[in-house]
Amino acid sequence: MEQIEQLRQTLRQYEYEYHVLDNPSVPDAEYDRLMNELKNIEWQHPELITLDSPTQRVGAKPLAGFAQVIHKIPMLSLDNAFGDDDLDGFLRRIESYIHVSSSQLTFCCEPKLDGLAVSILYENGLLTRAATRGDGTTGEDITANIRTIRNIPLKLNTLNPPARLEVRGEVFMPQVGFNELNEKALAKGEKTFANPRNAAAGSLRQLDPKITRQRPLIFNAYGIGVYESDDELPNTQFERLQWLKSLGIPVNDEICLAQGRTALLAYYTDIQTKRPTLGYDIDGTVLKVNDIALQEQLGFISRSPRWAIAYKFPAQEQMTI
Ligand SMILES: NC(=O)n1nc(-c2ccco2)nc1N
Image (cartoon, rainbow, N blue to C red):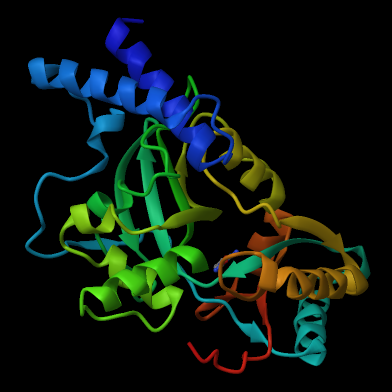
């Protein structure tokens, strides 16, 4: 591999260790030194610049507006449960639809991240397009802004990437970063955001990627949309998320499997207990039938999947800032 690609690969590894594993193997100064070395080489040889080079995270100039993106597979919203009886209704509907006792059903349980749902498309392993959920069918092209989010890889960490992989997940802003952003805005007499979700949405809808780049945004994947490859995807939600992780895509650490009603309720309670210590906003849990074949059998009710429910926490009394 020629020197410049070696340099890029090293920088990608360092970015992954720092922003995805939160466990850098070299000091920041070493990362900065190599990044400047790469910038110098590309400055002298612009013809060598590639879309996936670590130097290409920040778009050149502000956009005039956002192009539209049509989601080939709709990004649907989830049906909500607000109490155990809603959960029981969800479980009974599944049982009657596929004639399986819920005590035998395994669910992939995930925290419900309170940010903005996005779709990120990788073609032959390179990040080529990203979009907001929008109304589920039509979203806004926010590729330039998504590329600035440090824990999103510009290139998948695999030697034989799928021809097409659409990763779906949530972009959110941690509470510490949110508070710092608002303090800075106050000090500059600029508008502040009401909550981290609005701050994340506002940061992604910036026309200037240089502004988005300065915002403390994090991405966590929770699903797959379009997929084109000679290889099959894993057969369960949980294994698909592990596979995404193996490609260098960040997945939330609180995701686990639970079988039957009691284990689901235990997960819900466990996450509710952990909630104040997570460092980012969640508004409940998302409980998904783990087996993909069963998901496909269950399908969707108009706009929401029959195979998943968002079990929300009671609305928190508004925090007085
Ligand atoms: N917001 C959030 O964390 N979500 N949202 C889903 C989802 C939405 C539709 C299918 O799955 N899953 C998770 N973890």
